Length: 254
Image (tube, rainbow, N blue to C red; front, side, top):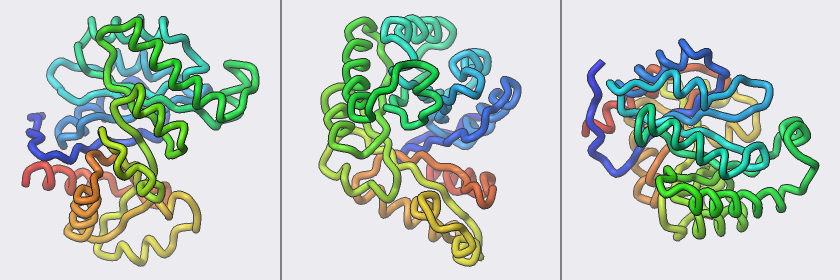
């Protein structure tokens, strides 16, 4: 597939929610690269197979899409993370970024370390990236997830940007750097009806809906408010990735 050029300030990233097989990840990489996505976010869960290895297997020099690899600092040392970055760059340079998350998944935390408070893990996340930058001169872009005061301080001190949900976006205004808003989208002429059928909760609060032009206008509005990137996905209620990809492709081509 031919890579489409990205000429706008707004960048798009796709959220990989499922534990894709190596073959599925290769296919997804080709699709998302064709539509012009900047990167795909690969999540971290101890009950899933490792995405560092699968991304190294999937990366192709014929594509430009990056792999934004989620890491939990309590599960890996900065020195070993640096070694993995160097190895990936030897395979294909400048094809990864990092999503640092303090972690709220209790089973993961219990598996990798002694129980600690979320406040302590946020502090350690900043120290982890500080150390990583000390030991790796070619450290890729680092994006911290969250909207707390501690996370904002980590972004200012050590990060390249912040990932936060749509409903938490207001707390990031004036922060500077890249602001990646995490949201789901329903693209349909009957989107309001579909949206109203969703269960109340976090996912619904972080979902935009409408036909193609309405979705584009909502994205433009976010851009006018300082959002530089969107991390987008289907809702769990309805898969409409083809329509979302079409919106992204059209916006990047404007």
